[in-house]
Image 1: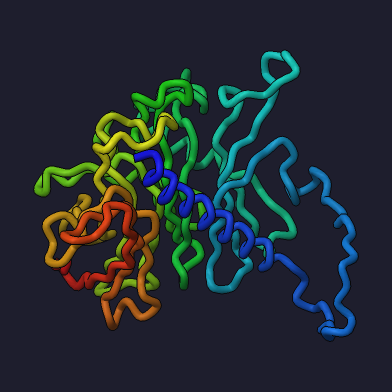
Image 2 (image 1 turned 135 degrees about the horizontal axis):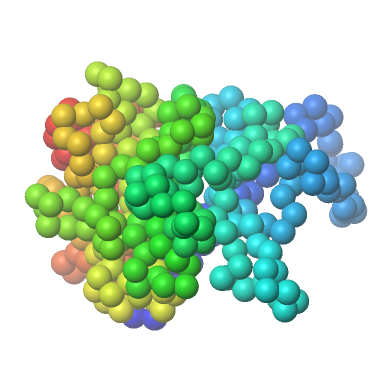
Length: 321
C-alpha cells in the first residue's frame, strides 16, 4: 500500500508544481526579444524581488495553487501566511493562516482578499460568531480554479476546522461570481464534507476542481475530484490505509438539483479507484458535454491495483453518463 499511495500523491504533487511553474511563465515579460540558439548560455542572475509595497510578493508566505482566466490579467493564488506568534524563533504549522491573493494587472501587484472568504465562512458555517479567529475556522485552502471564459467566477476548496485537529476537518467548496468580492458556501455536511445522499457517498478530500467554460441553459457546471476517506488518514498525512474511494462530484449553479451529485459511482463504464486527482471540462463543453478525469490506484478485472486511467464522460442536462 505504501508504494501505491506514493504513486498517486506523488503525481498530484508534480501536477501542482507544473501548474505553479506555468503560472510563473505567464508572468514573464512578453516583450523579451527572441534569442538564437547560438546566444543561449548557462549564465544565471538573481531577479530583483519586489518589496512588500502593493503585495507584489507576500513576504512570510507559501503559495500553493494559482488560477487565472483567459486574459491572463486577473490572477488568484491561495497559500498560507506564517508568523512567529509565540516568539520562539520558529514557525510551525499552527502559526500559519490560509490566504487568498488577487492580482488585476497580470501579477504586477497583489491584494489580500482573504477577509472576503472568512466573512462568508463565519456567517454561513459559524453563525456569525465574531469570537472565532481565522485559524479556528479554517485549517487551510486546498484548491482554487477560475472559469476559463469568466475570470470573475472562481471556486475555492477549503478545510473548515482548526489546523491542529484534522480528524474534525470538513471539506467545503466556496464560489464567487464577482471576482472574490463575495463568496457563498455550496452544500456540505458538517464533519464529513461533500455528500450525495442518493448515492450514499461522500467526498472528504478534494484534489482538483474545474468550472465549465460557459453556461448551458443558464447553468454552470462545477466538477470536483478527490477521495472519500472514512478514517481521514490522508488529511492527517498518515498515507492511505485502504479504505479510500475515488470520487467525482458535480454541482450545477442555478440547476434544478441544489446539491452535489456523485458522477462516477455506479455510472456505466466508470472504473473504481482510490483517488481522482484531476478533473477538466472540454473547452467545447457546451457542445460536446465532455469531462475528463485522471484516476489512480484503479481497480479493474485483470489489471494491477496501482494502474492509472484517463477516463472521459459526458454530462448533459440532468444526466451523467
